[in-house]
Length: 274
Ligand code: ADP
Ligand code: MG
Image (cartoon, rainbow, N blue to C red; front, side, top):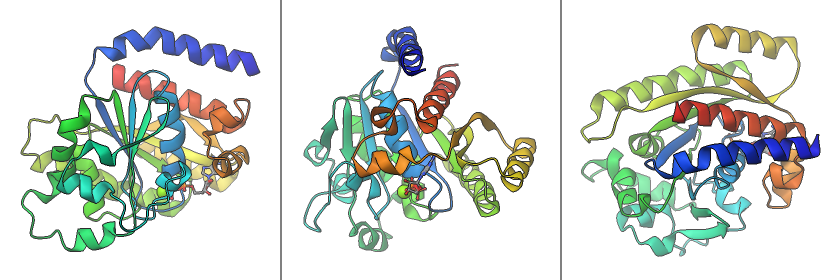
């Protein structure tokens, strides 16, 4: 099993990498109007997989800064972070954390920045505008969104080409789904830039356990939404990998979560390339 998975991924990388190099940067927001469903975990693991086929920028838009912390960045209030980058896109604010992976970190002062930014013109577009200067350095930009649908979410959406929505299979996460779709529709309708409409990649279930109640939620979701075939199984390797500052794929490629993330990654590639 071990080698099979590695071979499979590498074959996939070889097959797609030359095609992907010729294409424009893809910006993907990872979101859900609920915390604890695996947004940050998916940014880490999909980010790692994307880094095998191109250059990746991870953007931490959650002021809790879990994504930044998972790469060992514990920003002090004086350290430059995503809010400073939006105000003045200095590439020095972006940090390299792994081969092919850079990060634009967050810190708790982002909350105050949001409150004080109301007066700014074209507010929702500011992240997208700031990214223009560095975008071409990357093949993939993944934005880890907070659970709220406040300005941070608008900043992410208005900069994005794609949206990936996560769910833990609980009813409340399904209610969040409608809120997200509404915001995407609004953003596409209001768009005043030359960016194409945001495409919803679909809904991916995470922390999957074989419980009837969760399977029922998934069945209902399939009737309403575009649901990924792959479910990321609940796997202790995920928190274990995070404790070591690794993606779950690096930590244990044989774990259920690694296999599932690789499958989900391939499904995503199929959608953004097809
Ligand atoms: P969010 O960013 O949506 O708030 P996180 O990615 O931080 O959610 O995940 C919440 C918690 O669940 C974390 O402690 C993480 O380690 C754990 N977790 C995420 N996905 C899985 C999984 N597939 N199996 C087990 N634990 C998971
Ligand atoms: Mg998070």
